Amino acid sequence: MSENGDETKKILYVQTHGVSDPGRAATPFFLASTAAAMDAEVGIYFTMYGPTLLKKGVPETLQIPRAAGGGAYLRHFINQALELGVKLYVCQPSLDLNGMTQEEVIDDVTMIGGAAFNHMAMEADAVVAF
Image (cartoon, rainbow, N blue to C red; front, side):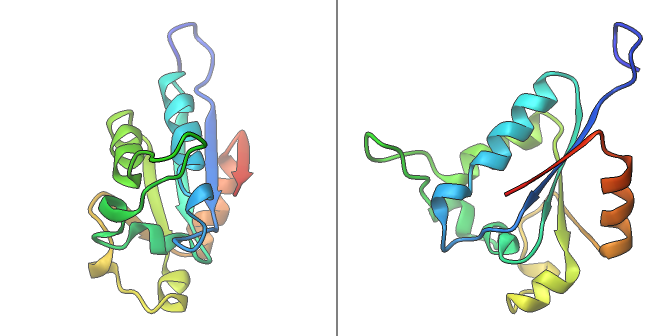
């Protein structure tokens, strides 16, 4: 329950884009951080090519483009989300799709399968895909 007695809202973001599309990499983290700051229970699920964003070394080197040039590195957005309590989940079959293992993924990521994802999606008040 939230402070005003309402049930805590749950939002699940689904990230399907990976390192080949850096312009889409930060948005789920930004929105998830905003929702967490609004006292929602928030998770981001990485599937398809999304897990490539979580490969060790990538967040520190993937710069998110901005119109004025430059931009912050993905690690900035990940740290912000984690600090606000956002949970990160990775799809096990998608790790295989990208030739990755759980050991190659950054810390603070939980590997789950399809049943766990479907359960989270059914329990969420909103599911937003990227």
